[in-house]
Length: 294
Image 1 (spheres, rainbow, N blue to C red):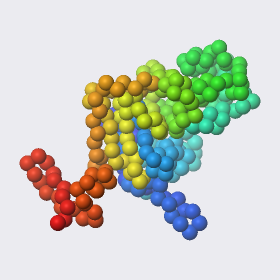
Image 2 (spheres, one colour; image 1 turned 180 degrees about the horizontal axis):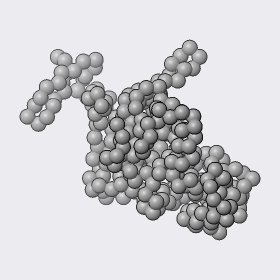
Image 3 (tube, rainbow, N blue to C red; image 1 turned 60 degrees about the vertical axis):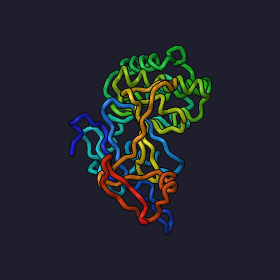
Image 4 (tube, rainbow, N blue to C red; image 1 turned 135 degrees about the vertical axis):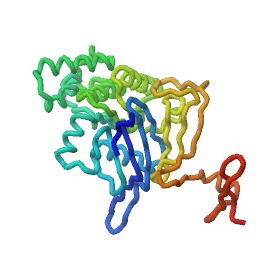
């Protein structure tokens, strides 16, 4: 399979199993996900659901235990260590929730942004020019000579975004990028992601606990127990991101069907109709009916 049909990310039946002492912990269990080029998708779910594991695998920081995963034209399961290094350097931008993980404390904003460019051919003058352009894009050209301790939390996260964009990545991954920010600053950061998406065409995946995220992005995917289970979209198709919750937009919620025809029915619905270990399924005039086994 390849991603030539407009898909930037394809995850098929993805598993990740960690061994802790004599125990096996299953972080992902048959996860499926498709993301188009230039799309912004929010990933939500409870702690331990597998959100950050998915981001780490997409970034090349971790390897899946089974399944298929394609990013762009790359099959991540077939990459050797040298391929992974080149993949991270040329195609991926990553933003951590903790801003101190994104920036070196003893470097200025401009130095932090240009540091990843050391691995790219070109003169220092050109690298500083690009770094200045990125800082201008995130609204911090006037703070280019300041070290992180002289910047606010929101300013540090803006610099972190510029750092993540320094290698001109096609895919930007953000793990709780607004988790440590106040509501106003968080809104500004999400607006900035919208600018990045519109101006650069960057595909963006954001892991977040923002309760209003469905009104800010075009698509939200809920991960439950290591699998994608529910998807929420706006009725009027929208693929970008904004910091303001557009609550007047109607939302549609879908239960997802994986590549093996499996669906996760929300527990509250199963409890409501009394379905436990077994159920009956049959065709009806309006579709498929699932009932108890009585």
